[in-house]
Length: 270
Image 1: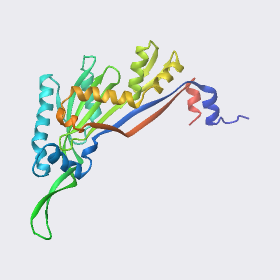
Image 2: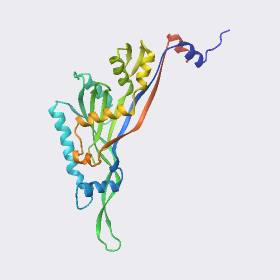
Image 3: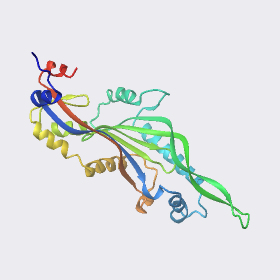
Image 4: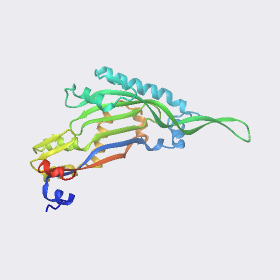
C-alpha cells in the first residue's frame, strides 16, 4: 500500500534551494505639501508670489516640464514611444532594452494617457457680497504620463513615471531580484539566474543575507540618484522651500523560491 505524500513531506525532504526576496516594488512619489488644496494654494501665492491661487498658473510649468523631457530624449537619441491602447508596456520596453548597449542610462521614454488625481480651480460666489472668487478643489483628469525606462548598475531595469500635470506625481518601479542578482555578481557569488529570480546558487546563505539588505535607505538613494539626472518639474528654489518628492510603497511583492530535487517531487502536488 502506498501512502500519499503531503505538501509538508515534499517541501521538508526535497527542497534543495530556498530563497526569500523582495520581488516587484511599485513606489508612489509625491510632494507632501501639494497633497491637499490649501497646500496647492500656498505654493502659488506664498511661495511663487502670485496675487491669487489658481491651477491655471501651473500651465507654463507643465509645458516647460514636457519640453524638457523631449529635449532630454532628443539630445541622447532616446526613442520616444507612444503606447497604443491595449499594448503591454513591459514588452515594448524589453524590446528596446535588448538593443541598449550601455551599462547604465535611460533607454526609452514611453507616453500614455491615464486618469490621475489632481486639482482644478472652480469659481465660487461670496453669499454676502455676490463677488466671485477662484477656489481650488480635488479633481481627476486624463493626461499624458511619461515613462522613463532605465538601466541602473545596482538595481537593473526600472522605470520612473511622471505625470505631465500638476502636482506632477510620479511612480518608481523596480525588481528586488534584479538588485540581488547584481549584488551577488559583485560579491563573486556564482548563481544561475532566472528571468526574475534564482534557480540555484553556490552560497545560498550569503545570497539570503544580500536579499535581506535591500532597505528603504537604499531605495531612496536610488530614487534620488535618478531624480538628479532626469528632467524635474520643480526648480531648485522650489526644492529648497520644501517642495521635494517623498517615497511610499504603493505595492510590494514578496517571493519565496523553493527549488525541488527532481521533477517527480513537483508532480506530487498534482
